[in-house]
Amino acid sequence: MIVDLSERLADSPYVETVMHGHTASDGSTVRPAESHWHMVLVRVQGNVQMLAVGALPAAGIAAWGREAEILWIKFRLGVFMPHLPVRNFLAAETPLPGATSRSFWLKGSAWQFPAYENVETFIDRLVREEVLVCDPVVCAVLQDQPPAAAPRTVRHRFLQATGLTQGQIRQIERAQAAAARLRQGFSILDTVYELGYFDQPHLTRSLKQWVGCTPGQLQAESIQIAAA
Image (cartoon, rainbow, N blue to C red):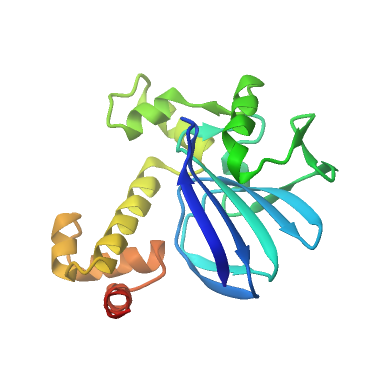
């Protein structure tokens, strides 16, 4: 169980959202696929660890321990570290070595652990030191702008910057949109039509692969929320 969970949009073109929370007990839950990578700071009983968490190309199980404080920095698609491409830690948590009790090593330098309130300052420093960059080709394609590169180059840039293909990202995002609609009370058939699925079995396969739930399970969540 996670308590005192806070989430906010980031005042940085490199970051999607910032989340902060505490765990009250051991637990696990189904976690959906995720096309974005994260930096995750975990504090447990005086120990601090910074992790680079890659994109998650399929739904799975997330588990956590008790009495942990966690900070999640979710990066925008196309943002990556050239010296540590996200494809190298796809579907994995890569610990970044500690330097002191208040800092960690990244690209040969010690960096102070960020806090929920100063993530933007931390990110600005990474950008200034060219540890963190944004691929303009990937960003343009995701905004439906004509790519200034050959298709083969675009495919390579997507894999380097996101760890995923453009098609995988689109499928994950569509499944997430479908899950959100079903949780809001939309019908299964309307969701199939609005999001361009072939039929209900196609929607079901997509949700089971990318979200880890069936349409019926998501509709049941909608009913429980409405009744609460």
